[in-house]
Image (cartoon, rainbow, N blue to C red; front, side, top):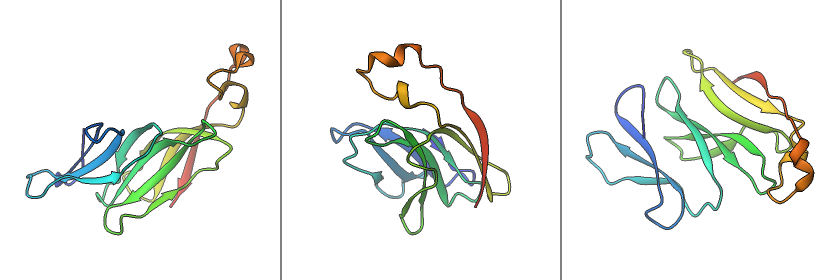
Amino acid sequence: MTWSPDGKWISYFSDASGNYDLYLMPSDRSAEPTRVMTGEAVWMDGVTWSPDSRWLAYAKTYPNNFRRIVVWNRESEEVTPLTDVMADSRSPAWDRDGRHLYFLASTDLALGSGWANTSSIAADPTYAAYVMIL
């Protein structure tokens, strides 16, 4: 569970629907929770609110087993992937000004991306810190 910086919203994950879904609800419980992501058969982590409480950023695993940094707009309910599909990105963090998003990414993860790939045993990917100006 994560509180928005303005204290008006709570985001959390639940598997109550049978899927691992991201929900958003007013912190005063004045309305029912809303599913932000539904029916996703992928794992999401790293949920963090923007300083103005308008955006949620998180790392979402895609079918190629790489994670992408994705943002969700609370007002428009639009989802926008920010990072490349061929890089494994994780751990998003907002700057206080809300115009910069920091994250870790690796472009040498390919051997370790398959769950049944025995060649990944020796893979040792490295992650670097990146900043994106929004």
